[in-house]
View 1 (tube, rainbow, N blue to C red):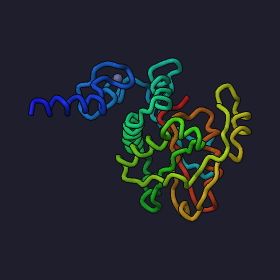
View 2: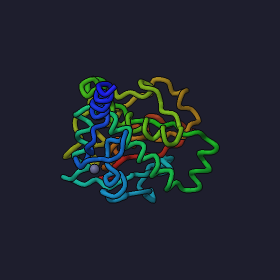
View 3: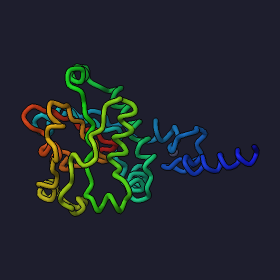
View 4: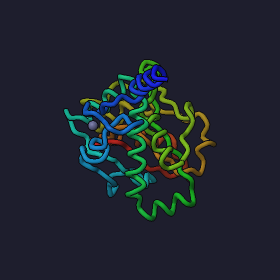
Length: 231
Ligand SMILES: [Zn+2]
């Protein structure tokens, strides 16, 4: 019995290590990758943007935190991409979902009552996803789904057909060109009459999520954008 308990604790420490994946401090909570301080207080809260810069039919943009260049959040989001930390992505998605629901504007809430939202993670290019093992935006969308009970679009419904080069160092115009025609919808009927909520890790100039929106939106659908961080 003692042996079994020991094995279980060892297993638990691998699945949910008792140090925070963000700051490394010990976490007292079970079943969490991040400490309470990182989840609730460490980062500056961003929130809803009034949206004057948003393209037509993007009804809202909500970001949980401001990006901290060179700080804990930048490191965490980097680690998420390259160190197979899918569970951390899901946990961040849960935080994002909760923050979004707490700040939900009543007019959007009414629209959601009429048209069911569909969570749409920004897809990765196939070979990039294979290399990383998973898509961090999809892990976040799964976390948002746990909190909101809204469905996540199936893998392969929206694909990234261009292996675009990194956006770092490009200005907003260059980013737009870089991404133009990068995405494709494989079955547009599945998106019909839905309120699409696009999910990504970081919002910088919006060129990525705006390009996805341009690809997925027909005449009837509307979209919103949710991201963990805003640069
Ligand atoms: Zn922490």
